[in-house]
Length: 181
Image 1: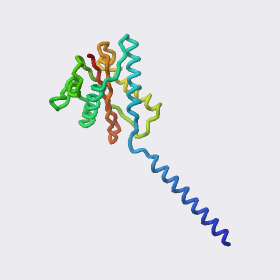
Image 2 (image 1 turned 90 degrees about the vertical axis):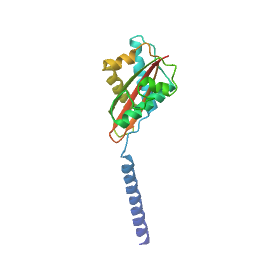
Image 3 (image 1 turned 120 degrees about the vertical axis):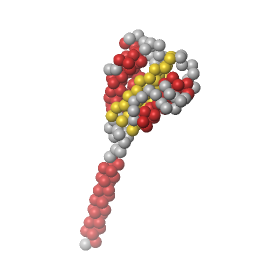
Image 4 (image 1 turned 180 degrees about the vertical axis):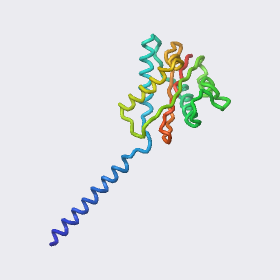
């Protein structure tokens, strides 16, 4: 009789642990916000842009730290105001060139800017998801004559891409700066 009780409790205990494990997996697998490797996304976008530039005999773009600071700043700004605008109200950062100079990029003689927002999913982005998102961003800019003009302008040799994720509204704001010294 004692063996039966022991086995019964052992089985119930294992069942309880199994149910707890399943409950934990279900709870923790429900993604509350997007998880996107922005460094990988940026690299994938740059690869697409440089492929497009190569097709029109423009030199490849390289990243620049001053442009990064200005691009990140403006991505945060447009996400905050939830409006696509090339202007800011801060008198020292009104336009793209002002922002680049504000962050120390005084050697830039020419600055261009592309920006957009697009929808994202509340999920962990795989490498394939990042490829698809990079292609979506690239194609949105490529379909716009003014954005494409910046993208393939042979005078630009530097670039940087800033992001801001708005999890609540399921959007990513993207700013690509271009520069020539």
